[in-house]
Length: 126
Image 1: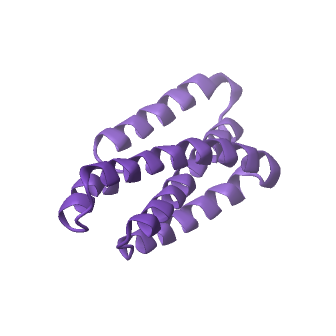
Image 2: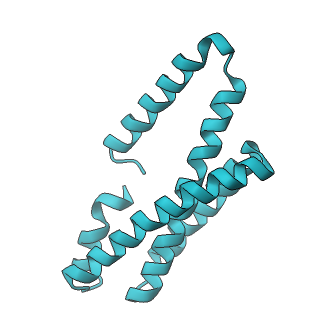
Image 3: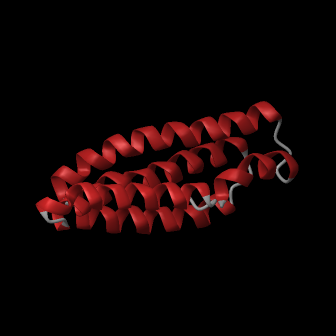
């Protein structure tokens, strides 16, 4: 629920300009792109289980840290790291689906995984 209200929070509570709020959201998107790439690379090296655990723990900590940021620079950096951590989880999770699915169920497994991801995103959960 952070992303849909981040811009409103930046403008109304932190008194950022609309442009500054836009930059914060752009940093969120950039962190997601970089996080997905690095998350896949790290999953290949340390394994999907450890990568998921690290991404979930650091993402949870970053949600708390983001809540305490009040300056443009600190919020921008924290937002980038938050989205990086959250998106680094996804490649590792896809690897887990591949690992635990029987060959005859891989298509169904990926379809259900994608459906759950889309439902989660469209219902407002990050």
